[in-house]
Image (cartoon, rainbow, N blue to C red; front, side, top):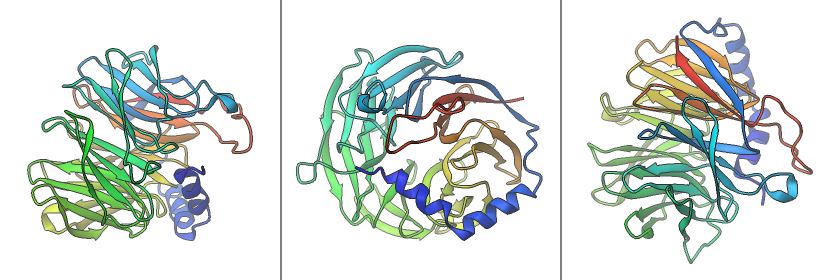
Length: 357
């Protein structure tokens, strides 16, 4: 099966808007890092994708998807020390985890998307055993993308990036699908949660918009423009109601006001194939991973100025922030060879720690 993201890269490389934005970035003086630095980079695993932090134990979990037939070690979750990035444990899993990984610290459960085989997996962190592979019997090959856990309600939300797309609502107590929402456009990707107002925001990539799902009525209640083309991941600031959205094709970060019907506050060019975003309220910093530029851009969340551009690795894929320590982690994918074994890439399959100076 051709990966969803592989199709995205082919489309993105040829887009004139993205090329024009990249040219603008090259001449804007953004390349000098002054407030943030790369503390450490370590090469780990093969075909690594997503990252999530276990803040209670200062641990980091990375999905690794390389199949054995292509020189990989099989599907697994790598548990890293949050300070040294040393691999402490490898959790072997039956399904190939991919674009989504989330954690419920209260139940000690990891949830991963399984885009190749369909559905999501619930993994016991303590034992490393799979509790359950959660599937839709009517569509067992559902292309799961983003997995988002609400620890307070023990509910898991899953975007299904099919045409047409779905939203799954999973009960974490039973690990059963409670409800499937079908009217979610085409290519649903990123998710973020506004707990106070009982709203879930869904990136609708094909429609260049953000869909609004009301948790009380369990229905779609609105939508607004994403501030660019091909919206992917999101980060939500509960203190201000701002939604930070990265748009892949236009290579930008959009700041949207959810209190004012998604009004665009600001759009900031960040780089080619802006894919992942994370927000740190303590340092008032927004991190954007630019897949095809090989860097992570740090944006001040008050002035919306770019304060650092850090070359982390070949293809920065996912960036997250530990809310307790303020430390950011980014996974860097390696160069791909679709028709054979992975190519040698010293700057790929790495994890980087980013810190404020």
